[in-house]
Image (cartoon, rainbow over all chains, first blue to last red; front, side):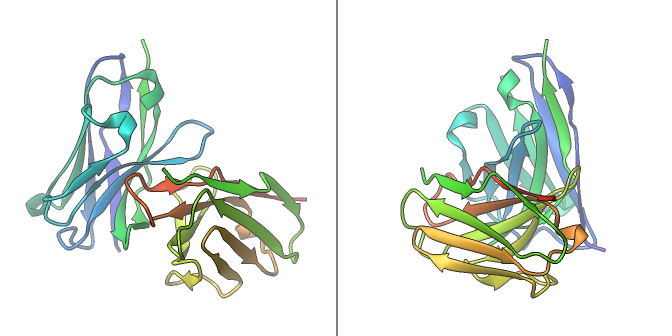
Length: 117
Length: 108
């Protein structure tokens, strides 16, 4: 059964860091480009970051550029999102998703990040 | 950045009805538009990509149409499991990939 499972969310103070992981089971991530998408409580969806299948290309929404870093370890079948200098407006459920022609095909269940003092 | 505007914000319908959801882009996206369904507490699910192609496993009751700036998602013979929030998303000009604000389909 193909599954994506995010982890690493939690409550963090503004200005601190957090690292999210997205582990795949039942299939290999190595042939897939991947994304992070977030959803603030009660709000809509916002694309956050993209990484190509081999990690050679990455793109970010402007609001996280310079603060967030997307990376992957294909040997561990895992995607990461390093989030630094967190702000209250980063509070959201973060989903990882596989890429299908720059659409989002398979999604994880999400992990909640709360930035609050 | 391409802005997607969805209407209506809320659609109140009964099982068996037909739902018609609209997504309008601030500039042409050709046919590079997708639709997603999200139920409460769940991740979104890809329904339609490239304006009119159903994703694997999506029932034929879901159909997409449109091009350039105006797109429609039609759900015929609504079933109880179809109620939720629907989002459109464009991939024509990016970054950033952008979503519409969503249309909630609720039971009347």
